[in-house]
Image 1 (cartoon, rainbow, N blue to C red):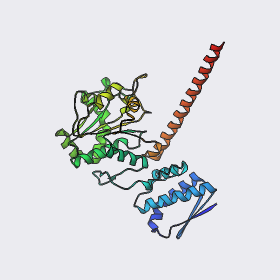
Image 2: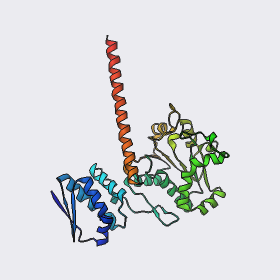
Image 3: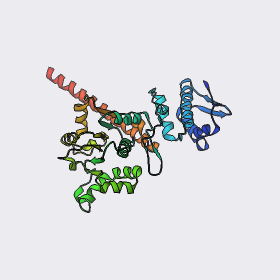
Image 4: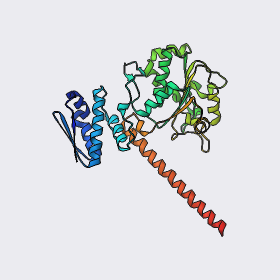
Length: 340
């Protein structure tokens, strides 16, 4: 099958951006879809099997629209749009408006890059408490901090509070050198990094000294009431049910809360139930609490990270299926024994 896509209404630079350096993006699409793409004057020709040619035409159309909006076409955008077309989800990046949440200190705009991230950002605007659950690299923490800084600058809240449970990922705090703060800082470093990127080190330090920005372990939240604040609990999969309940009951008036977690990366002791898992079951039906689930499609780091996350998801799904089959076989065996 041959499909033709008219490009006469687009500037040459738009088509060049879509093609990529040395036609890198075109080669990528041809290889993944098994099609041949030819670009001439005002026409793109796509040749391949019926479904593949249709997918290629739709993919190129979406990428051209993105480039025409001024977006840089990289591997992440090509992969995301391709996956959306293949699984017929319709979650195209062109559906994500280009509203900017804020700018980094370098002037780079911070905005949602996938449909999942857009739903997450919108939910933060609409709900008092939002749970952002998904794998590493989906922008859960970074977008939440961008929203927090924006609300702080607009004086919608008077302070920002960022917290994490200080759980050792295979290491012991006691064996790390230095005082308590020195031992805790490595666990809070990702939060500092995001704040530096968006606010700048000088503005961050100034507001930190005034007590307007606080970065602290979750244990420091006990006994407090947090009014008029934007509060982010990161790595919530490493909380216990008691810690999660303690944190949620700290929330005061005119506060906004974002809780982020990756359920596949728990560092809790074996047999310990995650507070994030319990919160999902207990709070799922409360109106002003939102649960947003991000997937490997929403990973915005290097494309290899997306493939790694997806490979682990598939592996864990197979492991789960295998366990279910073994349980079923064990159940049948027990049943036969009872009959005897």
